[in-house]
Length: 175
Length: 262
Image (tube, each protein chain N blue to C red):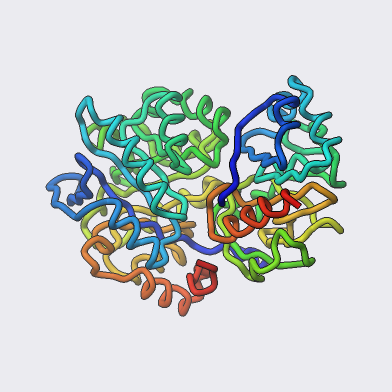
């Protein structure tokens, strides 16, 4: 993507970055405990830098989670819920399509009905901050943005849509 | 299944790797060379494969290092998810493979010996990264779990074992019918049906793919979430794009690559 990067879990180090990529897999409550242990929860909520949450990173932007019944960062309203496994297989795993709800530099040009690879057992609700949604049992938030916080549910390298989105993000962060 | 579920069914070519080459046997024995894994991986990605599985069957001390290097090369070449399995025994080994660029790791003999590894691995890396591979052989009216590349019976009932792997933290099951593997006589539909009534995690059907119709049946009758095949793809007996066209005609939701941006 042409951007230089470093990996850090230290707030002072992160202050040196132009923009933050906040990836994550695993358990919501465990991830929040890790963030709190380093005071990164407070730092993340108050930063004015562009932050791109990926997968669990995006989910933690919401207020609370059923996973470990925990409080998350509370940047975007709503509670993370588990997919109903009586309706279909959980986790939601595989290629599914993306419905654009709002225009935003992060996803402009990515294209409606884009196939992306999803892997997650919990989902974020759709609301006014949803840029794109995806349907699996329920309509859930696939891409979100609020102020300087942006997030995508689909993980890391998977799918060209993600590559487009992060490339745009790295440009967005420099503005 | 409700119409509210748009998730596509996955087609997964499987590459058995020995000493850095792709090989294929029948009923777990009699290997023949099927080419360079990186080249095949690239070809399958371009042809519309939804995911790939690499199973390392090399049995030397040098194995781990070679495998990690291969995983790193594959990750550079392809942009679809891939799973790596074969003799992985510890959380450290799993971490090494995931860090090299694999999306998932499949565990087989090691979790039968030490079921706690599943829980340990899924809490460390998330259950989405941990696939339980199960080799099952029909014994009378039920199925038995075999380990060590299908060479050793365990006495464990396969359905009970798959219930257990879900509870222990597996995010997906790769279920191979040893009776059908390499025979091209169709998947074991009875086994698939039964396991899909029992577990709520995705199940990849493996063993027996010989025709497009076999793959459709695994989804339509066996309720498989994904179908895995090896030789029919390696030796170009069936093109993935043709298979997807036929599946779509039979009402199965599949990912078509002209709808993605490349």
